[in-house]
Image (cartoon, rainbow, N blue to C red; front, top):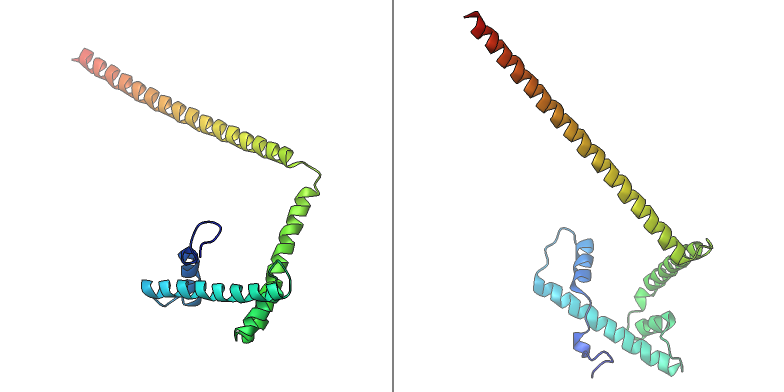
Length: 174
């Protein structure tokens, strides 16, 4: 069976990097073989497919078009994973809290009354000002290095002249 994107169901997997991160968080001091990691990826993919298929059936029986969190929880119970419902509800609360915080942060930005284009322009001005300050600082450092080099060269020239005039006085004495 092909999906709308043209990939088969077998091509849909969880990114391995995500699974590796989860494994490291859960088992920080345990080495897991690559084939075991691959098995975990396949199990996660199959579990998600199983739960989402069951939730889709429940959704269809309810004459709904969108799978809701309640459909997922009913699917878990139907599949014998009812013991996870408490944890699922807690994760759902956390997700809603994070989503609400994001909306609040976006609303704060929107409530400033400054259009996004203006904020971007101001940001670009600040970046340009910072680049200018950095260039001026680099120019000052370069000038200081040039002055120090000139002073060192002048000191060396003066020392050479002093040494050569002393040599001339010695020659005159002889």
